Length: 112
Image (cartoon, rainbow, N blue to C red; front, side):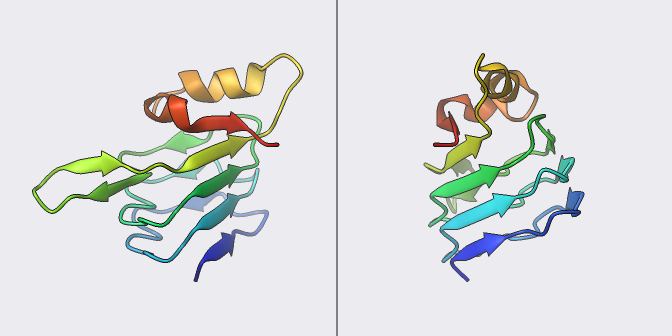
């Protein structure tokens, strides 16, 4: 699986749901999701793009966009996280300030 589009209506992505999907390059998360658990994309080393369709940041657990280095430590991968655009930057600013999301603030962009 390289591309994944989760269905609208889904509200929760449980811990480690896509753990170690090493070939996944793209994921689209619907606006209905309110909870993203711990380590959901842990080990998804090819994940380059995540589209988050919600205008309000869902709860985000720990190490969501990270990978295990093999020495008991974790590193962030270079995933670009796209959120909906707004005229006043309120959506992107909310994501960059939200708990969990703020760790990835340098990887969050408005959807082109």
